[in-house]
Length: 330
Image (cartoon, rainbow, N blue to C red; front, side, top):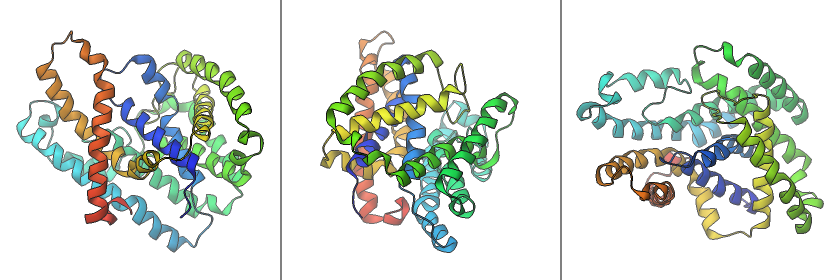
Protein backbone atom coordinates (compact mmCIF):
# COMPACT_ATOMS: atom_id res chain seq x y z
CA UNK A 1 0.00 0.00 0.00
CA UNK A 2 1.40 3.40 -1.04
CA UNK A 3 1.91 5.78 1.89
CA UNK A 4 0.61 9.33 1.50
CA UNK A 5 3.15 11.57 3.21
CA UNK A 6 0.84 14.35 4.30
CA UNK A 7 -1.69 11.81 5.62
CA UNK A 8 1.02 10.13 7.72
CA UNK A 9 2.07 13.56 8.98
CA UNK A 10 -1.54 14.48 9.78
CA UNK A 11 -2.13 11.19 11.59
CA UNK A 12 1.07 11.66 13.57
CA UNK A 13 0.17 15.23 14.52
CA UNK A 14 -3.40 14.18 15.25
CA UNK A 15 -2.47 11.40 17.65
CA UNK A 16 -0.05 13.72 19.47
CA UNK A 17 -2.89 16.23 19.88
CA UNK A 18 -5.25 13.52 21.14
CA UNK A 19 -2.78 12.40 23.80
CA UNK A 20 -1.85 15.94 24.82
CA UNK A 21 -5.52 16.91 24.97
CA UNK A 22 -6.10 14.22 27.59
CA UNK A 23 -3.09 15.15 29.71
CA UNK A 24 -3.84 16.50 33.17
CA UNK A 25 -2.88 20.07 34.05
CA UNK A 26 -2.90 21.26 30.43
CA UNK A 27 -3.31 24.98 29.78
CA UNK A 28 -6.98 25.81 29.12
CA UNK A 29 -6.36 27.71 25.87
CA UNK A 30 -4.33 24.83 24.42
CA UNK A 31 -7.08 22.44 25.47
CA UNK A 32 -9.72 24.52 23.65
CA UNK A 33 -7.62 24.77 20.47
CA UNK A 34 -6.97 21.01 20.40
CA UNK A 35 -10.57 20.00 21.04
CA UNK A 36 -11.87 22.36 18.39
CA UNK A 37 -10.78 19.97 15.62
CA UNK A 38 -8.77 16.92 16.77
CA UNK A 39 -11.58 14.32 16.70
CA UNK A 40 -13.17 15.65 13.48
CA UNK A 41 -9.68 15.25 12.00
CA UNK A 42 -9.73 11.47 12.54
CA UNK A 43 -13.21 11.07 11.05
CA UNK A 44 -12.13 13.20 8.09
CA UNK A 45 -9.06 11.01 7.49
CA UNK A 46 -11.17 7.85 7.84
CA UNK A 47 -13.41 9.12 5.05
CA UNK A 48 -10.45 10.27 2.98
CA UNK A 49 -8.86 6.82 3.19
CA UNK A 50 -12.12 4.85 2.87
CA UNK A 51 -12.20 2.30 0.08
CA UNK A 52 -14.40 2.88 -2.91
CA UNK A 53 -17.62 0.88 -3.13
CA UNK A 54 -17.05 -2.81 -2.37
CA UNK A 55 -19.39 -5.81 -2.10
CA UNK A 56 -21.18 -5.55 1.25
CA UNK A 57 -19.86 -8.88 2.51
CA UNK A 58 -16.24 -7.98 1.72
CA UNK A 59 -16.63 -4.52 3.27
CA UNK A 60 -18.13 -5.94 6.48
CA UNK A 61 -15.34 -8.52 6.79
CA UNK A 62 -12.79 -5.71 6.44
CA UNK A 63 -14.69 -3.63 9.03
CA UNK A 64 -14.62 -6.54 11.46
CA UNK A 65 -10.87 -6.94 10.99
CA UNK A 66 -9.96 -3.24 11.14
CA UNK A 67 -12.33 -1.95 13.84
CA UNK A 68 -14.63 -4.43 15.57
CA UNK A 69 -11.93 -6.87 16.74
CA UNK A 70 -9.59 -4.07 17.93
CA UNK A 71 -12.52 -2.45 19.76
CA UNK A 72 -13.26 -5.71 21.59
CA UNK A 73 -9.59 -6.24 22.38
CA UNK A 74 -8.95 -2.76 23.77
CA UNK A 75 -12.19 -2.86 25.75
CA UNK A 76 -11.02 -6.11 27.36
CA UNK A 77 -7.60 -4.60 28.15
CA UNK A 78 -9.24 -1.51 29.65
CA UNK A 79 -11.60 -3.68 31.70
CA UNK A 80 -8.68 -5.70 33.09
CA UNK A 81 -6.92 -2.50 34.22
CA UNK A 82 -10.17 -1.14 35.69
CA UNK A 83 -11.00 -4.22 37.80
CA UNK A 84 -8.23 -3.65 40.39
CA UNK A 85 -9.53 -0.10 40.88
CA UNK A 86 -12.98 -1.55 41.48
CA UNK A 87 -11.90 -4.19 43.99
CA UNK A 88 -9.10 -2.32 45.78
CA UNK A 89 -9.72 1.39 45.10
CA UNK A 90 -11.87 3.88 46.97
CA UNK A 91 -13.07 6.07 44.09
CA UNK A 92 -15.95 5.92 41.64
CA UNK A 93 -14.89 2.52 40.30
CA UNK A 94 -15.49 0.87 43.69
CA UNK A 95 -19.06 2.18 43.90
CA UNK A 96 -20.48 0.21 40.99
CA UNK A 97 -20.89 -3.52 40.22
CA UNK A 98 -17.84 -5.16 38.62
CA UNK A 99 -19.95 -6.14 35.60
CA UNK A 100 -21.25 -2.59 34.98
CA UNK A 101 -18.79 -1.91 32.11
CA UNK A 102 -20.04 -5.03 30.32
CA UNK A 103 -23.58 -3.65 30.21
CA UNK A 104 -22.22 -0.34 28.98
CA UNK A 105 -20.41 -2.21 26.20
CA UNK A 106 -23.79 -3.43 24.94
CA UNK A 107 -25.36 0.04 24.86
CA UNK A 108 -22.12 1.84 23.89
CA UNK A 109 -23.34 5.35 24.67
CA UNK A 110 -20.62 7.89 23.91
CA UNK A 111 -20.38 9.18 27.48
CA UNK A 112 -20.57 5.80 29.22
CA UNK A 113 -17.07 4.34 28.75
CA UNK A 114 -15.82 5.22 32.22
CA UNK A 115 -13.21 2.44 32.12
CA UNK A 116 -11.50 4.24 29.22
CA UNK A 117 -13.16 7.38 27.88
CA UNK A 118 -11.61 7.27 24.40
CA UNK A 119 -13.23 3.94 23.50
CA UNK A 120 -16.32 5.78 22.25
CA UNK A 121 -14.46 6.47 19.00
CA UNK A 122 -14.61 2.81 17.97
CA UNK A 123 -18.41 2.25 18.05
CA UNK A 124 -18.90 5.71 16.58
CA UNK A 125 -16.67 4.95 13.58
CA UNK A 126 -18.17 1.44 13.29
CA UNK A 127 -21.67 2.93 13.00
CA UNK A 128 -20.46 5.48 10.43
CA UNK A 129 -18.72 2.73 8.44
CA UNK A 130 -21.84 0.55 8.41
CA UNK A 131 -23.92 3.51 7.23
CA UNK A 132 -21.32 4.14 4.54
CA UNK A 133 -21.33 0.51 3.40
CA UNK A 134 -25.10 0.05 3.39
CA UNK A 135 -26.42 3.50 2.42
CA UNK A 136 -23.94 6.23 1.50
CA UNK A 137 -21.73 4.14 -0.79
CA UNK A 138 -24.68 4.07 -3.20
CA UNK A 139 -24.68 7.88 -3.40
CA UNK A 140 -22.30 10.22 -5.15
CA UNK A 141 -19.81 11.64 -2.61
CA UNK A 142 -21.19 15.17 -2.99
CA UNK A 143 -24.76 13.93 -2.42
CA UNK A 144 -23.67 11.98 0.65
CA UNK A 145 -21.84 15.04 1.98
CA UNK A 146 -24.84 17.35 1.52
CA UNK A 147 -27.09 14.78 3.18
CA UNK A 148 -24.73 14.49 6.15
CA UNK A 149 -24.56 18.30 6.41
CA UNK A 150 -28.36 18.54 6.58
CA UNK A 151 -28.48 15.85 9.29
CA UNK A 152 -25.74 17.62 11.27
CA UNK A 153 -27.58 20.95 10.99
CA UNK A 154 -30.70 19.34 12.43
CA UNK A 155 -28.65 17.98 15.35
CA UNK A 156 -27.00 21.34 16.05
CA UNK A 157 -30.40 23.05 16.17
CA UNK A 158 -31.90 20.45 18.51
CA UNK A 159 -28.88 19.32 20.55
CA UNK A 160 -30.28 20.74 23.80
CA UNK A 161 -33.30 18.43 23.47
CA UNK A 162 -31.11 15.33 23.81
CA UNK A 163 -31.40 14.30 27.46
CA UNK A 164 -30.41 10.64 27.14
CA UNK A 165 -27.51 9.65 24.91
CA UNK A 166 -28.25 7.37 21.96
CA UNK A 167 -27.08 3.76 21.88
CA UNK A 168 -23.94 2.94 19.92
CA UNK A 169 -22.89 6.58 19.75
CA UNK A 170 -25.49 7.35 17.09
CA UNK A 171 -25.70 10.97 18.23
CA UNK A 172 -21.95 11.57 18.05
CA UNK A 173 -21.89 9.56 14.81
CA UNK A 174 -24.07 12.24 13.20
CA UNK A 175 -21.21 14.69 13.77
CA UNK A 176 -18.52 12.25 12.70
CA UNK A 177 -20.48 11.33 9.57
CA UNK A 178 -20.24 14.92 8.30
CA UNK A 179 -16.45 14.95 8.53
CA UNK A 180 -16.21 11.41 7.13
CA UNK A 181 -18.22 12.41 4.05
CA UNK A 182 -16.20 15.61 3.73
CA UNK A 183 -13.09 13.44 3.54
CA UNK A 184 -14.67 11.40 0.74
CA UNK A 185 -15.63 14.51 -1.24
CA UNK A 186 -12.18 16.05 -0.94
CA UNK A 187 -10.54 12.77 -1.93
CA UNK A 188 -12.85 12.46 -4.94
CA UNK A 189 -12.14 16.03 -6.05
CA UNK A 190 -8.39 15.61 -5.44
CA UNK A 191 -8.44 19.07 -3.85
CA UNK A 192 -5.49 18.44 -1.54
CA UNK A 193 -3.28 17.66 -4.53
CA UNK A 194 -4.21 20.80 -6.48
CA UNK A 195 -1.49 22.82 -8.20
CA UNK A 196 -2.06 25.88 -6.01
CA UNK A 197 -1.56 23.92 -2.78
CA UNK A 198 1.71 22.51 -4.10
CA UNK A 199 3.22 26.02 -4.17
CA UNK A 200 5.03 26.64 -0.87
CA UNK A 201 4.73 30.42 -0.97
CA UNK A 202 0.95 30.12 -1.44
CA UNK A 203 0.72 27.69 1.48
CA UNK A 204 2.64 30.11 3.71
CA UNK A 205 0.34 32.98 2.73
CA UNK A 206 -2.72 30.86 3.56
CA UNK A 207 -1.23 29.92 6.93
CA UNK A 208 -0.49 33.55 7.81
CA UNK A 209 -4.11 34.44 7.04
CA UNK A 210 -5.92 31.41 8.46
CA UNK A 211 -4.00 30.74 11.69
CA UNK A 212 -5.08 33.97 13.43
CA UNK A 213 -8.68 33.44 12.29
CA UNK A 214 -8.70 29.89 13.67
CA UNK A 215 -7.05 30.94 16.93
CA UNK A 216 -9.51 33.75 17.63
CA UNK A 217 -12.61 31.85 16.47
CA UNK A 218 -11.80 28.70 18.47
CA UNK A 219 -11.09 30.58 21.69
CA UNK A 220 -14.18 32.76 21.29
CA UNK A 221 -16.41 29.71 20.76
CA UNK A 222 -14.98 28.19 23.94
CA UNK A 223 -14.84 24.62 25.19
CA UNK A 224 -16.18 22.00 22.81
CA UNK A 225 -16.29 18.21 22.99
CA UNK A 226 -17.65 16.05 20.19
CA UNK A 227 -18.15 13.07 22.49
CA UNK A 228 -20.25 15.13 24.90
CA UNK A 229 -22.17 16.92 22.11
CA UNK A 230 -20.84 20.19 23.46
CA UNK A 231 -20.36 22.63 20.58
CA UNK A 232 -19.45 25.89 22.28
CA UNK A 233 -21.09 29.31 22.42
CA UNK A 234 -22.36 29.13 18.82
CA UNK A 235 -22.90 25.46 17.83
CA UNK A 236 -22.96 26.19 14.08
CA UNK A 237 -19.43 27.55 14.33
CA UNK A 238 -18.15 24.17 15.51
CA UNK A 239 -18.03 22.39 12.11
CA UNK A 240 -16.64 25.51 10.44
CA UNK A 241 -13.84 25.92 13.00
CA UNK A 242 -13.11 22.19 12.82
CA UNK A 243 -12.82 22.31 9.03
CA UNK A 244 -10.51 25.30 9.32
CA UNK A 245 -8.33 23.48 11.87
CA UNK A 246 -8.13 20.39 9.67
CA UNK A 247 -7.17 22.47 6.63
CA UNK A 248 -4.50 24.36 8.57
CA UNK A 249 -3.03 21.09 9.82
CA UNK A 250 -2.97 19.78 6.24
CA UNK A 251 -1.14 22.92 5.08
CA UNK A 252 1.47 22.53 7.82
CA UNK A 253 1.89 18.80 7.16
CA UNK A 254 2.19 19.35 3.40
CA UNK A 255 5.28 21.47 4.09
CA UNK A 256 6.92 18.65 6.05
CA UNK A 257 8.89 15.86 4.45
CA UNK A 258 8.17 12.22 5.11
CA UNK A 259 9.97 10.90 8.17
CA UNK A 260 10.28 7.51 9.90
CA UNK A 261 8.97 9.11 13.10
CA UNK A 262 5.73 10.39 11.55
CA UNK A 263 5.16 7.06 9.82
CA UNK A 264 5.76 5.17 13.08
CA UNK A 265 3.33 7.44 14.94
CA UNK A 266 0.74 7.04 12.18
CA UNK A 267 1.01 3.25 12.21
CA UNK A 268 1.07 3.07 16.02
CA UNK A 269 -1.98 5.32 16.43
CA UNK A 270 -4.25 2.25 16.62
CA UNK A 271 -2.54 1.40 19.94
CA UNK A 272 -1.69 4.91 21.16
CA UNK A 273 -5.27 6.09 20.88
CA UNK A 274 -6.95 3.54 23.20
CA UNK A 275 -4.07 2.90 25.62
CA UNK A 276 -2.66 6.30 26.57
CA UNK A 277 -5.42 7.09 29.09
CA UNK A 278 -4.61 3.92 31.02
CA UNK A 279 -1.00 5.05 31.32
CA UNK A 280 -2.09 8.56 32.33
CA UNK A 281 -4.25 7.11 35.10
CA UNK A 282 -1.25 5.59 36.84
CA UNK A 283 1.17 8.43 36.06
CA UNK A 284 -1.18 11.06 37.47
CA UNK A 285 -1.81 9.17 40.72
CA UNK A 286 1.91 8.64 41.25
CA UNK A 287 2.79 12.27 40.49
CA UNK A 288 0.12 13.61 42.84
CA UNK A 289 1.64 11.47 45.59
CA UNK A 290 5.21 12.74 45.17
CA UNK A 291 4.72 16.38 44.10
CA UNK A 292 3.56 19.35 46.12
CA UNK A 293 0.35 20.91 44.77
CA UNK A 294 2.19 24.21 44.15
CA UNK A 295 5.07 22.62 42.22
CA UNK A 296 6.08 24.33 38.98
CA UNK A 297 6.48 20.82 37.53
CA UNK A 298 2.75 20.73 36.81
CA UNK A 299 3.26 23.12 33.88
CA UNK A 300 5.70 20.67 32.29
CA UNK A 301 4.02 17.37 33.17
CA UNK A 302 1.36 17.42 30.40
CA UNK A 303 4.12 17.34 27.78
CA UNK A 304 6.39 14.92 29.64
CA UNK A 305 3.51 12.53 30.36
CA UNK A 306 2.31 12.70 26.76
CA UNK A 307 5.76 11.84 25.42
CA UNK A 308 6.19 8.99 27.91
CA UNK A 309 2.73 7.56 27.17
CA UNK A 310 3.36 7.67 23.41
CA UNK A 311 6.73 5.91 23.76
CA UNK A 312 5.22 3.17 25.94
CA UNK A 313 2.31 2.70 23.52
CA UNK A 314 4.69 2.37 20.57
CA UNK A 315 6.49 -0.46 22.36
CA UNK A 316 3.12 -2.10 23.02
CA UNK A 317 2.15 -1.66 19.36
CA UNK A 318 5.36 -3.33 18.15
CA UNK A 319 4.81 -6.19 20.60
CA UNK A 320 1.21 -6.72 19.49
CA UNK A 321 2.16 -6.41 15.83
CA UNK A 322 4.49 -9.38 16.25
CA UNK A 323 2.50 -11.46 18.72
CA UNK A 324 -1.17 -10.65 18.06
CA UNK A 325 -1.54 -8.60 14.86
CA UNK A 326 -5.24 -9.37 14.45
CA UNK A 327 -5.93 -7.73 17.83
CA UNK A 328 -4.91 -4.36 16.40
CA UNK A 329 -6.31 -4.85 12.91
CA UNK A 330 -2.96 -5.40 11.20
